[in-house]
Amino acid sequence: MIPYADFKKLDLRVGRILDVSVHPRADKLLVLKIDVGAEVKTIVAGINGHYEGEELMDKKVVVITNLEQRELRGIKSEGMILAAVKDDKVILITPDEDIKEGAVVQ
Image (tube, rainbow, N blue to C red; front, side):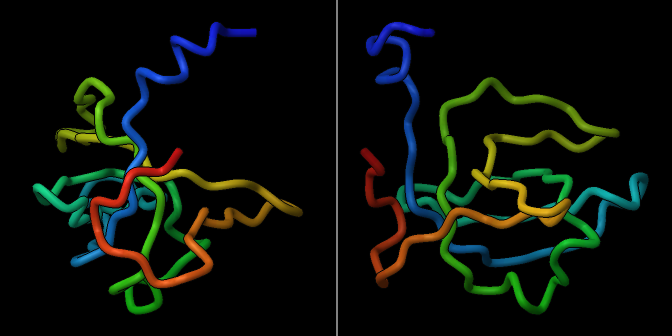
């Protein structure tokens, strides 16, 4: 259990995927450019094989925007997209209505 105050430290935003490429040094990783409203973030995610680049383009996702940057196989990741797993399939958490990039998720 974590205190609610710790949860409130997370900055969760709606983002729109602008660009997708396979990580040049890791087959399971995708490099995503995501518009989170005030900026575009690079996020490295282990979802290759669960999603193809074309199906991710313009998709709205939920992003943790204030994680410390982490270098994954030479590429800095500036956040994390939220996903769940069902029967070994990664399923991205997405808004069920169209909403503007940068909208705060509460």
